[in-house]
Image (cartoon, rainbow, N blue to C red; front, side):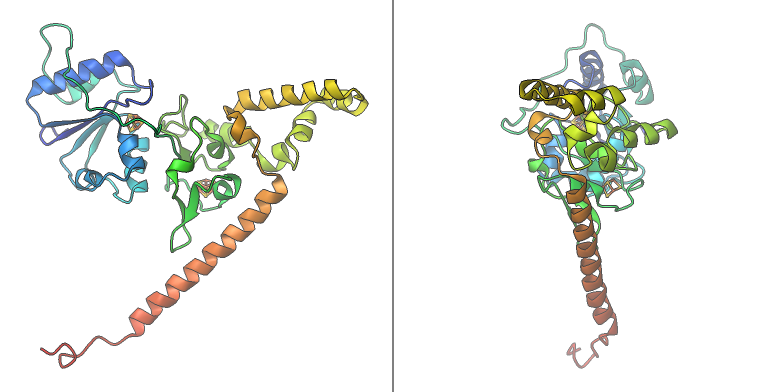
Amino acid sequence: MSCAGKVLYCDCAYSKVLPTQVKNEVRARLEASGREVEVVADLCEKFGRKDPSLADHASDPDLTIVACYPRAVRWLFHGSGTPLDPKVQVHNMREDSAAQIAEALQLPELDGAPEPSGLPSKPAGWMPWFPVIDYDRCTNCMQCLSFCLFDVYGTDSEGKIQVQNEDNCKTSCPACSRVCPDVAILFPKYAKGPINGAEVKAEDIQKESMKVDISSLLGGDIYASLRDRSTAARKRFSTERDESKALLERKRCLKELKEALDIPDEVLMTLPSAGEIEERTRRAREKAVRRRAISQTVADQETAMPAPSTEEWDI
Ligand code: SF4
Ligand code: SF4
């Protein structure tokens, strides 16, 4: 384990997912260690804003990052176009104790209670909340792009899925991670794993992808789909004639969906039907194939083009 080189410490200032005691002790011991330490208020915010300093950090093999789950941090860097050098160590304040991190980094003991210095200010106005794609798991199926009606996703020139409009994401909504059949979408500030970046276990794959099976749960009408989830509910609906009771039942269905999936109201109201998702997925795939074909044609033309002669270069 490298104990030289710079340390990038993230305080996760926009959320409470890192235990305060762990943050304070680790930061105070880092500051007492004499190592070069850069304290940032919130790395997610820097990624969301495409901070140019991230590229320098990413290419430094001696860097140590102290933040949250290594899977979340690595794919955050990747998503911002600056993949992290594989030698960079990432320590996780969500799971590890201050003592474990201090031991790994050979940090000194403190004489008294931790008293870390002041933090950099956090910009107001935007909660850094957006999806991060784990490309080791992603199969480019386009379900997320088709499901999200806020244009958070797009494709690159190769037709590969990307998070393109982080600002459009609805704060605290993890809905698209639930439709991903491969548990490839993370929200680093989400409360629970594996969506928060914790390692994906075999049972997670079934559990997460079962939470929103878009074809069966949404089924073109979320109320009807929820209604059909139990025979009793179906019976109640088929005999229901009272409009106000039906309205109450709809509200109950929405509440159930909201609680089961942590989906905010404004997103619930925009859920597309299964047919819409299928159609959008088909269009997205066609577009991706066209983009791939165009970039292949350009690459072929460049390969076919003869190299300039020394006369042409005027050498
Ligand atoms: S979620 Fe992780 S990377 Fe993002 S701000 Fe919090 S600790 Fe930093
Ligand atoms: S739904 Fe998951 S696997 Fe499919 S493109 Fe999106 S991130 Fe990749």
